[in-house]
Image (cartoon, rainbow, N blue to C red; front, side, top):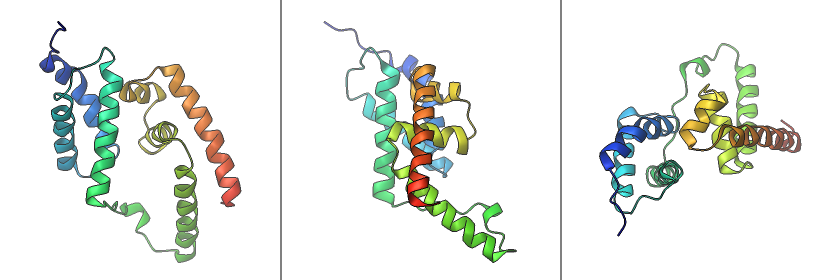
Length: 159
C-alpha cells in the first residue's frame, strides 16, 4: 500500500514556486492566487509521483493555459509603451514586438518559458530552473537552443 502524500508539506514547499510561475504569466495578482489554489486542488485529486516538482509544474502550466483559453486575456500596455511622443518610433516598436511575438510562438513551450522568464521577468537561469523544476544544465541548454531558434525565426520573419 502506498503512503499518502503530505499535502501540507508539499503546499508549503512548492506554493511559492507555483505562485511565482503563475505571476510570471498572469498580470492580475488576485487571479494568480486563485490559480495557485486551483493547481493544488487539482493535484490533490491524484497520487503524487516521486518527482513532485515536475508534476506540479505540468499542472501549473496547463492551468495557466486553461485560464487564457477561458478568459481570452489581453495584457495591459505598460505605461512606458504608452508614451506617444514619437509615433514613428512607436510604429517601429509595434512591428518589432509583433515580429518578436511571432518568433516566440515558433519556440517549443519550455524554451519559450525560459526565454520569457529570463529576459522579460529578469530571472536568473538558476531561478528559472527552480521554478520549472528542471536542472540548471537543462535550463541553460533550453536557453541556448531557444535563443538560436529565436534568432533564426527573426531572420526568417525579417524583423
